[in-house]
Structures are given as structure tokens and as C-alpha cells.
Amino acid sequence: MFKKCHRLFLLLVAIWLTDTLSIRAEEVDLELVLAVDGSGSISSSEFQLQLEGYAAAFRNPELQGAIRSGPVGKIAVSMMIWSDAVFPKFPTEWHIIASPEDANRFAYVVENFYQHSGRNYGIGGGGTSIGDGIAFAIKMIDENGHSGLRRVIDVSGDGIETDPMFGDAVLLPDAREAAQLHGININGLAILTDFFRLDEWYRNNVIQGPGSFVVEAENFEIFGEAIHEKLFREVSVQISESPMPVMLENSHHASLNYGGELANQ
Image 1: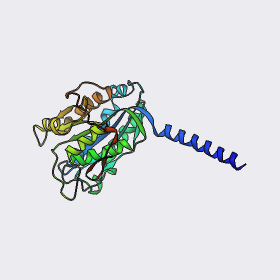
Image 2: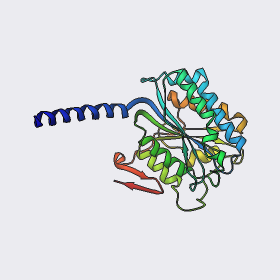
Image 3: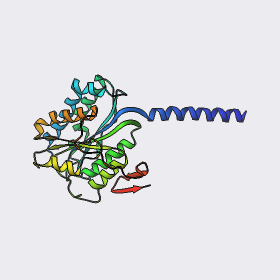
């Protein structure tokens, strides 16, 4: 009797594990983190313009059609607000978008994210810790329970990386290397209000991976147009500005310990 119960227990555990793993490994065309600048150079109105631009893009029928055009027909997306490394990051939940209704629901979450992002409570600001934001986004992708044919971090901001104001931070060179080791592309949207050549700086210091690219916005007022173009290219697997990089060895054994250290396991 004990053996029968034991075998039944093992069978139930095996079924549970299979179901759990299948749920955790839901396949999507794209795993996408929208990493949005919430540093001190971004005013409250500029921050809201970013959110409204992302929301309008996801409500656009052209983008909604592009999302459904991949081999799987859906993507997993989350928004995350980053700023100085000393301040916490603020991510949304992961959302599966497989229909216009899904996209509209996510647009609503994004448009109203201001009140949940920390900026509404005086949290955030300070320096521009792009690498630290990317490191957090890598962790988000690795732990999201989805299996994407592509993995992308979408960085938007109006400044170059600054030295951490307090404590340690993951800097861009290490963050880019970690993204490459994890098979994650980084694309950029450079807002040219404070740095006229920020798009060039993003090309040289931020983006990473096969087909990675930069889109520029002259100001926050036209941010929505720029982010629509950027998202359409990302979900459509279009056009490259950068050549295929040489992949580093042992990429599947590499990890980034969030908090400032790159580790090879």
C-alpha cells in the first residue's frame, strides 16, 4: 500500500512539475522591458509625456498588428522606471499581449503608472544610472517565467550615464557585457533636449546585440512618435544599425549579480 501511495505521490509531483514548468515557460515572440528614465533631469511633466507616448503606441492598430504578426503571435512586456542607483526600481507586472484588447489594457497600466512609480511620492531622481537600470532589467527577464524567441531591453532617456551618487552601481560596460552573455539585445531612444549628440553616445555606449539600434527624439513633445517607431521595429524584427557582434564564450554560464558585480559561474 505504501509503495502504491508513494508511486502515486511521485506521479502527481511529476504531473505538477510538468504543468508548472509549462506554465513558467510560456513561449512568446519577444520578452521586452521598457526601461524608462526617471532620473533628476526628468521633470514630472516630461515623465508623464514618456508614459503617454508609450501608451499611445500600444493603442496604435499598426503596432498591435505587428505584435500579432510573429510566429507565436504574442509578446511579454513590462515597464520599469530607473533613476539613480541608490533609488529603487519600479516595474509593472509582466503582461502578455496577444490581442488589441491586451495591448489596450497594458496601455492603460502604462498611462497611469505615474502614481505607482515612486515619482508621485518623491522617490527617484538623482543621477542617471543606466547600467544599473539595465542590470535590473536583465534580472526581470531571467525571472519572468517566459521563453522568448527574442529578448530586448528598450532604454529611453535624456542623458549620459553619471557616476553613482551613493554606494555601488552596475556601470554600462558590465551591464552591456551581461546582456550579451544572456542573449539580450539593448536598443535606445535618445531624447536630445540636454545632449544634442546623445543619439551618438547611445550608439557607442548603450545599445548591444545583433540588429540593435537607436531612435532619437528632439524633445519630449515628439517622444510618442519616436517610441512608436522604435517599438514597431522591435516587435517586427526590422532593420539593424549595428553589425553582428562576436559572441563571448560560455555565454550560458554567465550571470550578473545585481548590485554591481559580473560573475561567471
